[in-house]
View 1: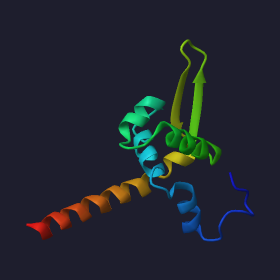
View 2 (view 1 turned 135 degrees about the horizontal axis):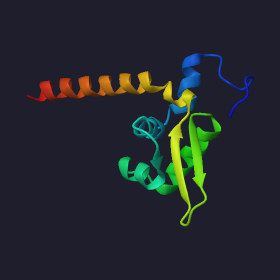
View 3 (view 1 turned 60 degrees about the vertical axis):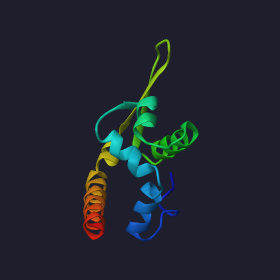
View 4 (view 1 turned 60 degrees about the horizontal axis):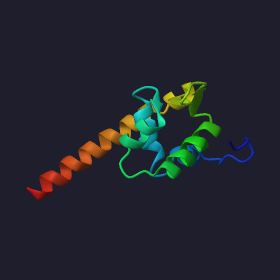
Length: 112
């Protein structure tokens, strides 16, 4: 997690820093549905490798967006969920979904 002196001055740049790669919005989208195990997240996000998912989850945990809970069972069970801060990103994800739907509709209309 960056400290306050390392954060970008611009709030938009800060948000992009936190969720601005190809995978993080998709991880958040799936975690908005509720707590998930690693494999469930991996299956739900087409094209993501285990390594990339692990890296993104670790970064999001470090940034305070994701909570990782380990259960001392055999086999070991690990669950991921959004923190309160992570859940506050829901309107951004909803806006992205709305824009994506509208864009797809316009492209479809142009092709007809």
